[in-house]
Length: 196
Image (cartoon, rainbow, N blue to C red; front, side, top):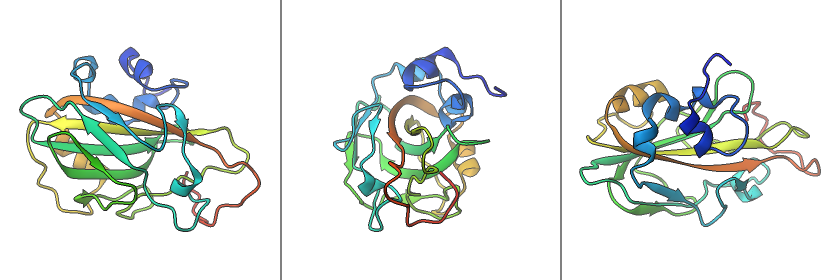
């Protein structure tokens, strides 16, 4: 792999190491940041568990899943969320980038609009519905949460690279939550996009 993942990242994300070294977390966080008590969970899936179709391209009225977090370290000014799938061909597919989350315990409800959203891999500022190829092995969707020591000043619609540049050197803590999804072969996705 061109970007081998460090051991702490392999330990944090269930499944094979392939592709993990290109995730946002590999460039922004380190083992110390991962051990600072920040946590992320969802009422809709367990870590490593399967996404319900209501959060994917198999349902026309699908929305982003609910998330809740706790334990940002003292001094946290803002929380940033990046959701990527490392399992496709090439670079990870970015499904969601969110910032402007207050630096404290909080949550995003199912389908709730975040404060600020940037461009996903399809170029849209929204939750990009997981849509892996029918019959393919389950894909992972890694929800990466970062606690920053300064607020992000980017306007909505910024790119992933712009967000990562703003975060670099300011991550106090990080955590990851992983979901999986595969088409069961019975229903075709309504979304024709090839991104997964």
